[in-house]
Image 1 (cartoon, rainbow, N blue to C red):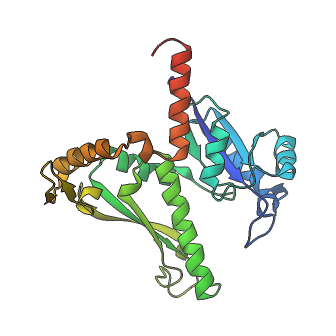
Image 2 (image 1 turned 90 degrees about the vertical axis):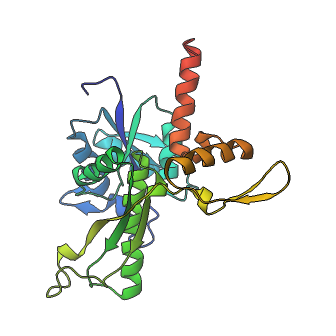
Length: 266
Protein backbone atom coordinates (compact mmCIF):
# COMPACT_ATOMS: atom_id res chain seq x y z
CA UNK A 1 0.00 0.00 0.00
CA UNK A 2 1.22 3.47 -0.84
CA UNK A 3 -0.78 5.24 1.88
CA UNK A 4 -0.77 4.95 5.68
CA UNK A 5 -3.98 2.96 5.93
CA UNK A 6 -3.77 -0.77 6.39
CA UNK A 7 -6.25 -2.60 4.17
CA UNK A 8 -6.98 -6.31 4.51
CA UNK A 9 -9.49 -8.82 3.19
CA UNK A 10 -11.34 -11.33 5.35
CA UNK A 11 -13.00 -14.35 3.74
CA UNK A 12 -15.73 -15.94 5.89
CA UNK A 13 -15.92 -19.69 5.27
CA UNK A 14 -17.78 -22.66 6.73
CA UNK A 15 -18.42 -26.30 5.84
CA UNK A 16 -22.11 -26.47 6.78
CA UNK A 17 -23.53 -25.24 3.48
CA UNK A 18 -27.18 -26.32 3.06
CA UNK A 19 -27.29 -26.37 -0.76
CA UNK A 20 -23.78 -27.72 -1.36
CA UNK A 21 -22.25 -29.47 1.68
CA UNK A 22 -18.50 -28.89 2.19
CA UNK A 23 -18.58 -26.27 -0.57
CA UNK A 24 -15.51 -24.39 0.67
CA UNK A 25 -13.32 -27.46 0.13
CA UNK A 26 -14.78 -28.60 -3.21
CA UNK A 27 -12.06 -29.34 -5.75
CA UNK A 28 -11.78 -26.89 -8.66
CA UNK A 29 -9.03 -27.76 -11.14
CA UNK A 30 -6.91 -29.39 -8.46
CA UNK A 31 -7.35 -26.84 -5.67
CA UNK A 32 -10.03 -26.43 -2.96
CA UNK A 33 -12.44 -23.54 -3.64
CA UNK A 34 -11.34 -21.49 -0.63
CA UNK A 35 -7.72 -21.69 -1.80
CA UNK A 36 -8.68 -20.30 -5.20
CA UNK A 37 -10.40 -17.35 -3.49
CA UNK A 38 -7.58 -16.33 -1.18
CA UNK A 39 -4.96 -16.79 -3.91
CA UNK A 40 -6.91 -14.42 -6.18
CA UNK A 41 -7.09 -11.94 -3.33
CA UNK A 42 -3.32 -12.10 -2.90
CA UNK A 43 -2.98 -10.78 -6.47
CA UNK A 44 -4.62 -7.51 -5.43
CA UNK A 45 -2.32 -4.51 -5.24
CA UNK A 46 -4.58 -2.81 -2.69
CA UNK A 47 -4.59 -5.47 0.02
CA UNK A 48 -1.90 -5.69 2.67
CA UNK A 49 -3.06 -9.06 4.03
CA UNK A 50 -5.69 -11.72 3.44
CA UNK A 51 -7.31 -13.82 6.17
CA UNK A 52 -9.82 -16.67 6.18
CA UNK A 53 -12.28 -16.55 9.10
CA UNK A 54 -13.78 -19.95 9.88
CA UNK A 55 -15.07 -22.25 12.60
CA UNK A 56 -13.74 -25.36 10.84
CA UNK A 57 -10.42 -26.93 11.81
CA UNK A 58 -10.47 -28.77 8.48
CA UNK A 59 -10.67 -25.50 6.52
CA UNK A 60 -7.94 -24.05 8.75
CA UNK A 61 -5.63 -26.99 7.99
CA UNK A 62 -6.20 -26.72 4.23
CA UNK A 63 -5.70 -22.95 4.06
CA UNK A 64 -2.52 -23.05 6.14
CA UNK A 65 -1.22 -25.91 4.01
CA UNK A 66 -1.28 -23.54 1.02
CA UNK A 67 0.29 -20.66 2.94
CA UNK A 68 -2.87 -18.81 3.93
CA UNK A 69 -3.67 -17.06 7.22
CA UNK A 70 -6.61 -18.18 9.36
CA UNK A 71 -8.58 -16.71 12.27
CA UNK A 72 -10.76 -19.18 14.16
CA UNK A 73 -14.24 -17.94 15.05
CA UNK A 74 -17.41 -19.14 16.76
CA UNK A 75 -19.68 -21.72 15.11
CA UNK A 76 -22.80 -19.80 16.19
CA UNK A 77 -22.59 -16.96 13.65
CA UNK A 78 -25.64 -16.62 11.39
CA UNK A 79 -23.92 -14.52 8.71
CA UNK A 80 -20.49 -14.07 7.20
CA UNK A 81 -20.45 -10.45 8.34
CA UNK A 82 -20.90 -11.57 11.96
CA UNK A 83 -17.97 -13.92 11.53
CA UNK A 84 -15.83 -11.11 10.12
CA UNK A 85 -16.81 -8.85 13.04
CA UNK A 86 -15.40 -11.39 15.50
CA UNK A 87 -12.23 -11.88 13.46
CA UNK A 88 -11.70 -8.11 13.26
CA UNK A 89 -11.35 -7.92 17.05
CA UNK A 90 -7.96 -9.61 16.74
CA UNK A 91 -6.64 -7.21 14.09
CA UNK A 92 -5.30 -3.67 14.08
CA UNK A 93 -6.39 -2.40 10.66
CA UNK A 94 -8.08 0.60 9.06
CA UNK A 95 -10.16 -0.99 6.30
CA UNK A 96 -11.59 -4.50 5.99
CA UNK A 97 -12.88 -5.82 2.68
CA UNK A 98 -15.48 -8.59 2.94
CA UNK A 99 -14.95 -11.20 0.21
CA UNK A 100 -17.18 -14.28 0.23
CA UNK A 101 -15.30 -17.54 0.60
CA UNK A 102 -17.23 -19.20 -2.24
CA UNK A 103 -16.59 -16.52 -4.88
CA UNK A 104 -13.79 -18.35 -6.67
CA UNK A 105 -14.06 -16.15 -9.78
CA UNK A 106 -15.21 -12.89 -8.21
CA UNK A 107 -13.96 -9.65 -9.74
CA UNK A 108 -14.15 -7.02 -6.95
CA UNK A 109 -13.40 -4.22 -9.43
CA UNK A 110 -17.02 -4.06 -10.61
CA UNK A 111 -18.44 -3.77 -7.11
CA UNK A 112 -15.73 -1.26 -6.17
CA UNK A 113 -16.94 0.99 -8.98
CA UNK A 114 -20.44 0.98 -7.52
CA UNK A 115 -19.14 1.60 -4.00
CA UNK A 116 -17.04 4.56 -5.15
CA UNK A 117 -19.96 6.01 -7.09
CA UNK A 118 -22.21 5.83 -4.04
CA UNK A 119 -19.63 7.32 -1.70
CA UNK A 120 -18.92 10.21 -4.07
CA UNK A 121 -22.64 10.86 -4.75
CA UNK A 122 -24.49 10.68 -1.40
CA UNK A 123 -27.84 11.69 -2.93
CA UNK A 124 -28.52 8.50 -4.88
CA UNK A 125 -30.30 5.37 -3.68
CA UNK A 126 -29.79 2.02 -5.38
CA UNK A 127 -31.83 -1.16 -5.80
CA UNK A 128 -29.65 -4.27 -6.14
CA UNK A 129 -31.39 -6.92 -8.25
CA UNK A 130 -30.40 -10.58 -8.28
CA UNK A 131 -31.15 -12.84 -11.26
CA UNK A 132 -30.57 -16.50 -12.18
CA UNK A 133 -30.77 -18.83 -15.16
CA UNK A 134 -33.65 -21.33 -15.46
CA UNK A 135 -31.70 -24.49 -14.73
CA UNK A 136 -33.56 -25.22 -11.46
CA UNK A 137 -37.10 -24.82 -10.14
CA UNK A 138 -38.71 -21.42 -9.56
CA UNK A 139 -38.56 -21.54 -5.75
CA UNK A 140 -34.87 -22.47 -5.64
CA UNK A 141 -33.94 -19.77 -8.17
CA UNK A 142 -35.87 -17.11 -6.28
CA UNK A 143 -33.97 -17.91 -3.07
CA UNK A 144 -30.67 -18.09 -4.94
CA UNK A 145 -31.19 -14.71 -6.62
CA UNK A 146 -32.18 -13.09 -3.31
CA UNK A 147 -29.05 -14.48 -1.62
CA UNK A 148 -26.94 -13.26 -4.54
CA UNK A 149 -28.30 -9.72 -4.19
CA UNK A 150 -27.96 -9.85 -0.38
CA UNK A 151 -24.24 -10.66 -0.67
CA UNK A 152 -23.64 -7.58 -2.81
CA UNK A 153 -25.74 -5.49 -0.39
CA UNK A 154 -23.63 -6.71 2.56
CA UNK A 155 -20.40 -6.05 0.69
CA UNK A 156 -21.37 -2.45 -0.10
CA UNK A 157 -22.48 -1.77 3.49
CA UNK A 158 -19.15 -3.13 4.74
CA UNK A 159 -17.38 -0.76 2.33
CA UNK A 160 -19.03 2.24 3.99
CA UNK A 161 -22.22 2.77 1.96
CA UNK A 162 -25.20 3.57 4.20
CA UNK A 163 -27.73 0.75 4.37
CA UNK A 164 -30.50 3.38 4.21
CA UNK A 165 -29.50 4.09 0.62
CA UNK A 166 -29.52 0.47 -0.49
CA UNK A 167 -32.16 -2.18 -0.98
CA UNK A 168 -32.07 -5.57 -2.68
CA UNK A 169 -34.46 -8.03 -4.26
CA UNK A 170 -34.22 -11.40 -5.98
CA UNK A 171 -36.17 -12.05 -9.18
CA UNK A 172 -35.15 -15.64 -9.82
CA UNK A 173 -35.54 -16.60 -13.48
CA UNK A 174 -38.42 -14.19 -14.18
CA UNK A 175 -36.28 -11.61 -16.04
CA UNK A 176 -34.01 -13.52 -18.41
CA UNK A 177 -31.47 -11.43 -20.30
CA UNK A 178 -30.84 -14.17 -22.86
CA UNK A 179 -34.32 -15.55 -23.55
CA UNK A 180 -33.21 -17.91 -26.32
CA UNK A 181 -30.75 -19.66 -24.00
CA UNK A 182 -32.12 -19.80 -20.47
CA UNK A 183 -28.93 -21.49 -19.23
CA UNK A 184 -26.74 -18.64 -20.47
CA UNK A 185 -24.29 -17.12 -17.98
CA UNK A 186 -25.74 -13.71 -18.91
CA UNK A 187 -28.84 -14.62 -16.92
CA UNK A 188 -26.85 -15.26 -13.75
CA UNK A 189 -26.22 -11.64 -12.86
CA UNK A 190 -26.58 -8.66 -10.53
CA UNK A 191 -28.08 -5.39 -11.77
CA UNK A 192 -27.97 -1.98 -10.10
CA UNK A 193 -30.86 0.46 -10.56
CA UNK A 194 -30.94 4.08 -9.40
CA UNK A 195 -34.17 4.46 -7.44
CA UNK A 196 -34.40 8.11 -6.46
CA UNK A 197 -32.53 11.20 -5.36
CA UNK A 198 -33.64 12.04 -1.85
CA UNK A 199 -32.49 12.64 1.70
CA UNK A 200 -35.65 11.57 3.46
CA UNK A 201 -34.97 10.20 6.91
CA UNK A 202 -36.73 7.96 9.39
CA UNK A 203 -38.21 11.09 10.90
CA UNK A 204 -40.83 11.07 8.16
CA UNK A 205 -41.94 7.60 9.19
CA UNK A 206 -42.18 8.57 12.85
CA UNK A 207 -42.81 12.29 12.73
CA UNK A 208 -44.57 12.82 16.07
CA UNK A 209 -42.87 14.99 18.67
CA UNK A 210 -44.29 15.98 22.06
CA UNK A 211 -43.68 19.64 22.88
CA UNK A 212 -43.18 21.17 26.34
CA UNK A 213 -46.90 21.91 26.46
CA UNK A 214 -47.62 18.18 25.94
CA UNK A 215 -49.04 18.85 22.49
CA UNK A 216 -48.19 16.44 19.71
CA UNK A 217 -46.47 18.19 16.83
CA UNK A 218 -46.53 16.46 13.45
CA UNK A 219 -44.26 17.68 10.70
CA UNK A 220 -42.69 16.29 7.56
CA UNK A 221 -39.20 17.38 6.64
CA UNK A 222 -36.90 16.68 3.73
CA UNK A 223 -33.24 17.11 2.93
CA UNK A 224 -30.83 18.80 5.32
CA UNK A 225 -33.64 19.92 7.66
CA UNK A 226 -34.80 16.33 8.12
CA UNK A 227 -31.28 15.16 8.91
CA UNK A 228 -30.81 17.86 11.58
CA UNK A 229 -34.17 17.08 13.14
CA UNK A 230 -33.45 13.34 13.20
CA UNK A 231 -30.11 14.08 14.85
CA UNK A 232 -31.80 16.01 17.65
CA UNK A 233 -34.44 13.30 18.13
CA UNK A 234 -31.62 10.79 18.48
CA UNK A 235 -30.19 12.92 21.30
CA UNK A 236 -33.54 12.78 23.12
CA UNK A 237 -33.74 9.03 22.57
CA UNK A 238 -30.21 8.47 23.84
CA UNK A 239 -28.93 7.24 20.47
CA UNK A 240 -25.36 7.81 19.31
CA UNK A 241 -24.00 7.63 15.78
CA UNK A 242 -22.24 4.37 16.67
CA UNK A 243 -25.64 2.78 17.23
CA UNK A 244 -26.23 3.00 13.48
CA UNK A 245 -22.95 1.29 12.61
CA UNK A 246 -22.63 -2.40 11.82
CA UNK A 247 -21.02 -4.53 14.53
CA UNK A 248 -17.91 -4.76 12.35
CA UNK A 249 -17.47 -0.99 12.02
CA UNK A 250 -18.36 -0.40 15.67
CA UNK A 251 -15.71 -2.86 16.86
CA UNK A 252 -13.11 -1.28 14.58
CA UNK A 253 -13.95 2.18 15.90
CA UNK A 254 -13.74 1.07 19.53
CA UNK A 255 -10.37 -0.53 18.88
CA UNK A 256 -9.06 2.72 17.41
CA UNK A 257 -10.29 4.71 20.42
CA UNK A 258 -8.61 2.28 22.83
CA UNK A 259 -5.40 2.48 20.83
CA UNK A 260 -5.40 6.30 20.86
CA UNK A 261 -6.08 6.31 24.61
CA UNK A 262 -3.17 3.94 25.15
CA UNK A 263 -0.91 6.25 23.15
CA UNK A 264 -2.14 9.24 25.18
CA UNK A 265 -3.54 11.02 22.11
CA UNK A 266 -7.04 11.39 23.57
